[in-house]
Image 1: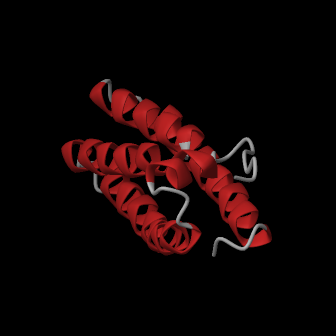
Image 2: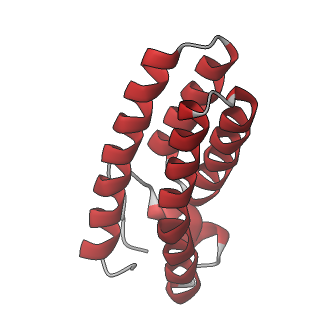
Length: 117
């Protein structure tokens, strides 16, 4: 297996879980890359609408899906957002959502440049 690890994602994590099936991994990455913008939009909408419980749930979903594919940095941001929502730390939540979006763009570029999406 190629050592496809970068700061945004460890693709070997998913490849190993899938027995090295790059086609299946690519399909999963495609779905993930399509879903994350919806998660982010929902979090921003919930933040704007002050629906903190839904914001926490959306962050929790993103944390899990990111962790499942080896996107640990995005998972960590989502966990941080989830925790900050519990304390109504709005300023930090906004910053962390922005940082998460930037990290997602890095991840997406990496997946594209390595022919996963």
